[in-house]
Figure (cartoon, rainbow, N blue to C red):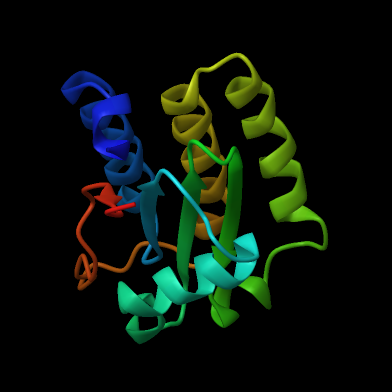
Length: 145
């Protein structure tokens, strides 16, 4: 099971990175991990995005980090609100940085650094509002496959 790859400590570090990123923004970040992706990676990420109801955030500024560990595939999917604001190629730059960690087998560190970088952009375009509500759980979600 995908959850077995990450220790409790690693899960906590990813959760803390999400919480840290969200402290400075009204944006929402979610990490979803499973073992296998039986379809095109972005299609699967879009399906998970919808299943997690990330498209229902008030400002449409959710970001999903999707990782299929055993198939060695991952995607970053931003909702329409954030995608209209970030510079072209932004997600590609984060992906390249994360891939360097993944290639060394350090999946937790790759996710943490990717989440932090996404948080910087979210803060720039969707600053924290005093009435902000955490719309999505900060816990990693795990697939069953």
